[in-house]
Image 1 (cartoon, chains in turn red, orange):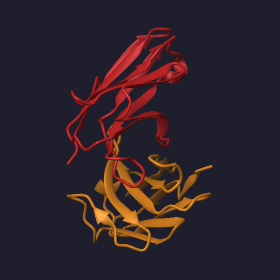
Image 2: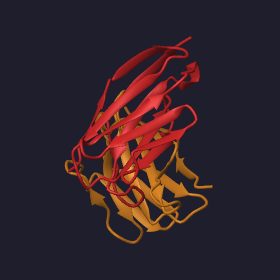
Image 3: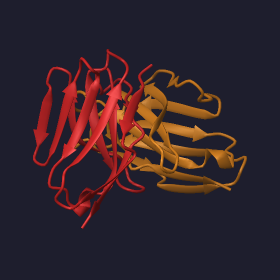
Length: 113
Length: 115
């Protein structure tokens, strides 16, 4: 089955700096890579996703890159703000939707004002 | 659109009793629903996948006789934790697909505490 590794497990940055979270996956059949933000006691929220037919996607301060050959994908948050503090999960799936999604262990991001 | 609700949000039960958690898609038909368990400071672990009208598919290591899943309609799936024990205390989250392609929509979760 799919195995998703994520690092770092914790990350502290100064407000305004950038944050990068990296993930690797094992199953070459995975084609959909969502990123979720989870605040304590709440549901995961999809913040950005990327499919294997593109190498990069950007949405305002958030960007995701994908290297399908190396089975790497990364989340980049620029100009971090205190409200970005949360746990971020990367995930991989053959196609999302009706198919199972395998999550990484999560990265606790702390943005220091 | 694409709202998923869960009920109850919190439940405390005594060891040995059973607890039922409901997951509903409010504004779309969910052909597939997923049940996850999340222990404190850990990731979401998939327990099972259920398709409407079919038996659920359980992940390895998840006891199907202990965690009963029913997906009887396109808007409702239930997870029943039978003979609950303290080690079953966790955050249970469902997700549903059937709206936009690719995306799964998460419910708000149910905090189960077994005393």
